[in-house]
Image: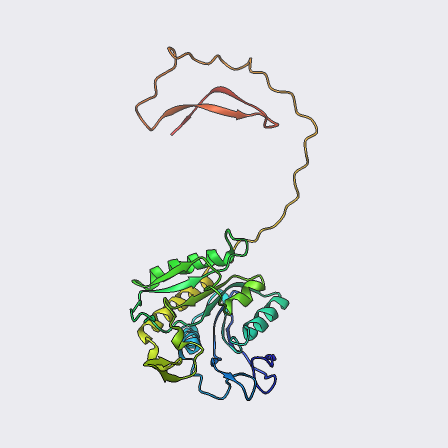
Length: 322
């Protein structure tokens, strides 16, 4: 997989996705994917090399070592278990270059006819403190694309994941955000959405852009750079628990129903004659209609006799039910 010369000084480079697969026990063709990306990027332009600074430190602790850590934690938690569907745990390359790693994976799965039911991307999920200094550690945002603007498999999947979070991680919310991503931003879940799969994304409550895509430095009293000291590991652990629970629930569930087409019944060219109502006893008047019995064990109800052809039914007598 080649990255562009524009983003990588010195020419194209080759990257590799790291993917582990837990084979499904009974329905291995069904697939759930969970991912993070292990690459990072700086912000400064390197005039001598032409492109983004590729020699300075780019720790990428939150974007996206945090998501990669979630994937590894899920692998450790689920490796000894067996599920109906298969699970793939991916650490993608070249997300910062334009979702190249996830696009290659999603395209390969689509070409192979894989039944990808859900793809979860974890990207920037490790910090609870926002740029205003406030700590918001009670929820993680959950984005879900909806191409038609009404509803989508991704949006329904997000609703299910939110319910799972409430069940298995009490006091922590997967907060539904009905957008494909943040304004002007993107992530690896969009590669699956573009391939026709249900892709959703976890992201922390309030991102601090001083800690994203920034060269490491101190400037006018502000600490720039995506460094590990800005992370909240208790918060990150909660996000990992939500992921593990969602994956286990989905991979254990039955396959979704398949929509199939069936031949339409032959159209009737002519209607059968309507039955005569003369053979039925006259309907009782209000004065002669019997009262409803007070006991619920015996109830007189009219018997509906279905006439062949389905056009009319005649009320003929009554039947007793208990």
